[in-house]
Image 1 (cartoon, rainbow, N blue to C red):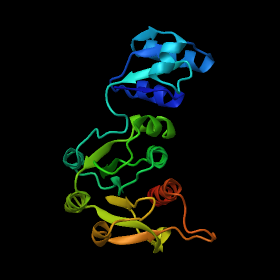
Image 2 (image 1 turned 60 degrees about the horizontal axis):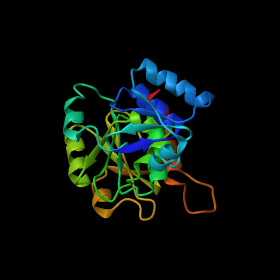
Image 3 (image 1 turned 180 degrees about the vertical axis):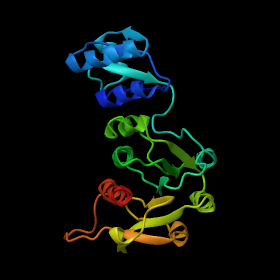
Image 4 (image 1 turned 135 degrees about the horizontal axis):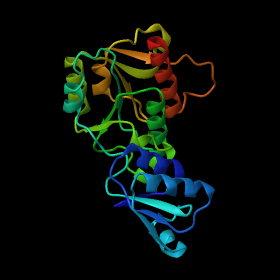
Length: 239
């Protein structure tokens, strides 16, 4: 059991229709009152509580906290079911995360995925970011909307996607400029870890590498910023 405390995280979780509640309310300013009204409209149970008690349950609260049973940011669909549900669709977009360990980066990536219409995020079920409260807050609630799947073996997941007609490209600063690569159709992008990038086994199974041309003096972009740039280019090509 955990508690969401960010206003955006609480609001988007309630809007998503996923199981949640009660909404614990200690004190409510104007913004919190809007969320309380939303919860009432969505028939989410309210519980009045003291500030001291709420601080003990959810130290980062701003007068309200939403109780959720599941791990926000955990898997909510299997890769097999996602592929089976595609039908004849030709333009699906998948993001594969290879050991993103910083929950702030993970949350920011999910926010980009929501903005640019990623259909599925696939990550490892080990050695990935696990702080669900931070992920939920950093994603500004996008975690409640972006479909995610966990895979024990990302190599096998890539093979399954290829069998389903996906072309898979790894993100690398030395790769072909992303704007020069045709990224229509069923496409998956592989994003490496913050420190070491894409692992050798995953790199070997990519159909190509794409990069973001840079004029900067430091080594690279933050991983979540890079994801935003790459996803924007995919959507630009498909617009």
